[in-house]
Image 1: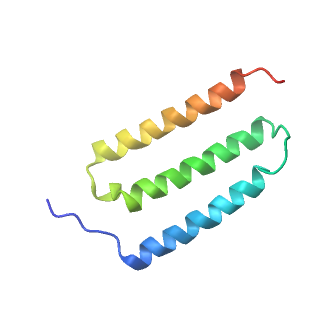
Image 2: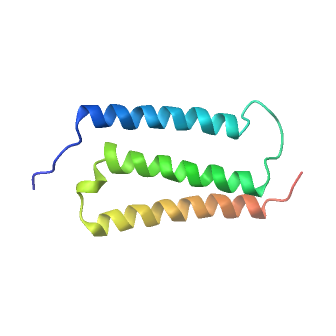
Image 3: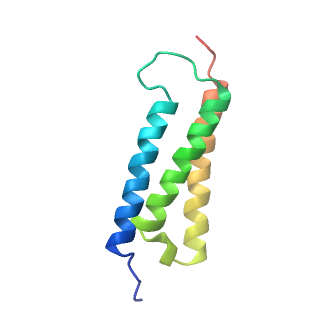
Length: 95
């Protein structure tokens, strides 16, 4: 099987998007403050983290060239992980 690899230009563009998203998430997540973000912000941050993970899977692990079974499997696994984290957040009592 011959897989077509993404171009260097595309990989650098995705890398820049990931760096910008990381900086944005750090600001939105208020990593330098000891506060409770609330359920809405935590949900938004986890959705954005899932989007970043999808970009890594699609371009750096070249999942877009895989069969639809692998694509659906990885995305489903990612959703399970993010749902588990979100569920753990909701079930953890506030201090």
